[in-house]
Image (cartoon, rainbow, N blue to C red; front, side, top):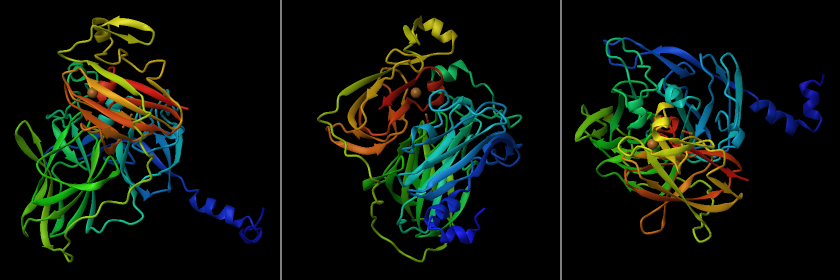
Length: 455
Ligand code: C2O
Ligand code: CU
């Protein structure tokens, strides 16, 4: 055995030392715990958690660094972790049956990958995600910029809604509820932020805050508004906007989407500012920001966050691939394919399948798109259903094509309202097999699931 000193003298030290320094792998244990989700007076709720809490342990690192986590599965079901929005190496994407085998109870799997882009991301279970995410298996993944923006506080706010039985405070385990699957998905009856009902944070008057919003809900679209704050959207789905967008009125945040805001606290001392969400004309509070004291600095104006290195999207040589979103209540499927077999809408419903993408009510054998590495593509999503959908691509960000034909912001999840058609454009620059699905998790579980191949 070489001593440390001999290694240092051997000339390979430069290779050996950094490896030793970075070799630490932390466990991320998927386990059942009890947490106080509901307001005081209700009992604790038994949840499934990464690392003993909901949201799961925050992973925070710098752009270009590596996430190394050993998923230890102490749950009664197989599990995996998907690192949502990370332009990740395919083998680490966490999709059972496509990029890895699900990790059986009592077993483990080590995830080890570089995060190429700064921004607000999250991780979540990707096996039986309709159930496992609803039970709490998700957490924030924050990749810091090399130069952090000048703010007084950086607050990660993970939004979720839970379906709890009021008498017991426990999660209602109706994960195959046909009404949820065929309508808007599983909507909860308790909205939490960072696993708490209506939490309060202390802020100073005039303070500048960065709010990192993550929608971890199964199906709820939050229609967000500011109260006692003025602010700008500085990033969407992790990716900085070239021009920060002043917030006026309400901004939708669909399941899996993120939004980074920079806000200035306007309310006076002793008042409560905060974040609200609008639903059917009613407004309810999500987070309370209790104003105490005065911020030291007084800032005006805002600068964009530093851009990530993204490919240049070309439209001229990008073929258009249409993906039609079909089925669901009120527009029931006549028929769709399940693998090689065409089944009637009734037969599919008996199997708990209510939706289809381009006529397939599950991940088809052949990819929706077989792309050459580095090629440009447009996808046109045509929503023929009576519900909104949040379409998500794995392994890539894409640009929304605006109505005037120009390229809009980078995203990894796009909300497509009922009857709407939206086009996106991407460079297929990450080799592998990647999912493309609706992030209303009841919809993907009952048919809205496809994939594309880059090679
Ligand atoms: Cu965040 Cu395939 O999902
Ligand atoms: Cu959907």
